Each structure stands twice: as C-alpha cells, then as structure tokens.
Image (cartoon, rainbow, N blue to C red; front, side, top):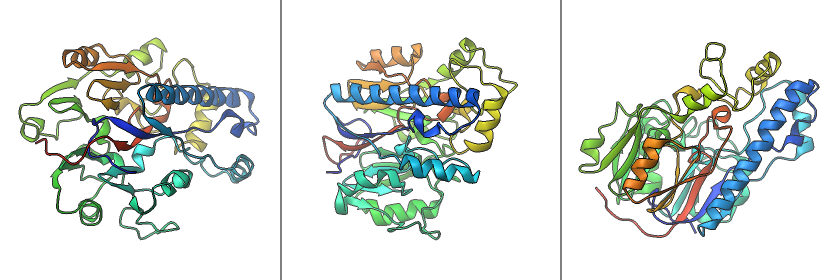
Length: 339
C-alpha cells in the first residue's frame, strides 16, 4: 500500500536503488578501465546492500529494482551509444504523494515494484514512452512533502505547467502548494528531519525558510563532506573541476576519457551537491547519512536525533546521495497540517 505524506513519519516500505554488477562490463578491452569501473560497481553494490540491511534493522521492508538482461545489455553497448544509468536513484524518477505513486519518469527496471501497487500508481506516460507527455524532463527530486503543504521547485527541472498537472491529477484540493526555487535538486538543498527541524545547504539562497517554516530551527551546511574526501584522495580539482570524483582512486586518463565518452549519463556535477543534506529519515529519532559531518551530527543530537552512517563511497561519482538512492513508499501516519 502506498502511504507517504512526509519525509519523517515512521518508514515502513522503501525502494533502495541498484547498480549494475561488475560482470556487466566484462566486455571492456582495456584492463585498466575495466578494473577501475568494476571496482566502483562492486563497492557501490556492497554499500547499497549494507544500506538495505541498516533500513531493515529498523523494521522497514526494502524493495530493489530489477536489472536488464546482462547479455542483451552487453550486446547493446557495441553500438557506441552512451551507457544508460542503472536504476540507482529512484527518488529522481518517482515519488509517493499521499496514497498515490507518481512515476515522473517510467524507468523499466522499476516496473515490477510499481505493478505491486496497482491503481495507486499514476503513470502519465502510459505503457510506452510518450514523447508528448507533460512530465517529460521533470525530476521527482524537485518535490518536498510537508503533509498538507507541498513545495515544488519551479525550474528547468519542473516547470509550472508540470506542477499544475501534478496538483490537478495527483494531489487534489486537500493540499496547499508552495514555490521553492532550488534549481532542480530540492532534496540536496533542504531536508526536514522532523517537525521544527530542518537541514539546509548553502544553495538555499532562493528559499525563504524563515517565512515558510516560522519558528523552525535550521542548520545550514556550508562545508560539504565532499571537500574533505577530495583532500584525502588528493583529487586534482583543476584537472576535473567538480564534474565527478572517485573516492580512493586516481583515475587514469584512459578511464576519465571512457567515463566522459560512454558514461556521461551516469555522472553529474558533484562539486555543487551537498550530500550531507541528502539523507533518509527513518523516523523522528533516526536519520541515515552517507558520511560524517560534525556540524550536522551535533545539530541532530541537539534535537534528540540519532545520526546513522551508511557509507556510499561513490556518491561523488554517481552524484547520488542517500535520499536519491531511496524512495519511500509507505510511512505510518496520515495527512496532517504542520505549517
């Protein structure tokens, strides 16, 4: 059953994304490139499996996407086209809005999961990709739920007409709609840990949190943990200025060329993403983060929140944090007014 009105009511059911397994890329001829990529995939697989275990320890059911058939996948890569992104970041592609699951982008690897929820699923694309679908180009990460109040990032990633369609066809008249300009990545700009407690980032300059959330305490994250990771890894910023970064490795020129040529759909621009805000709230007392950040953890403990680390070693490669790699389906509770 789909039931999720906020990001903090007790989590009962969630999707955790999946990366390709290393053997999907056995066909790469260059042994250096193959080894570096397969290490990233193996470690990503380990970290996502560990994230599943952590969530299950707190009592929630975890569902995982399918992967495409490996032989067909490998055959398709001989065409020289860019390699499609694995089903790693479900929060970017769909969102639970009350008792409806909106498929903003119909990712095939999520079909099996979505089929479980029958007519609770809203798929404006239909059975096949619709080039004229009103939600083409939109991102589900641009929507933040606060019970009866829903914040939409009206930007290049969620146009006003797309917001209007979601309001008319999914939410309905019980909700109050707010504009929140976060330039397309709302869940890495601000996150509500529980009523009265917000994490935000240095990218919140177009938000007015004091007005929208009167009396709520806000911790603004100025120093992202990525900079410490880059320092430890001796990442040469001038050679790859913030596009992607591989923790624990120094990418060879051949690997960098391979990524920029064939895996450009995988990477983003990680220097601007504050992964310390991109978290998963299990309930009002427990929140999962991908890395340690002292100001964030001190803020959590001051509000009687237990910060839990489930490492994602390659967030800086995939440009996807804990929130991106998960998508809540069911939380205990109903529609309430918080603002």
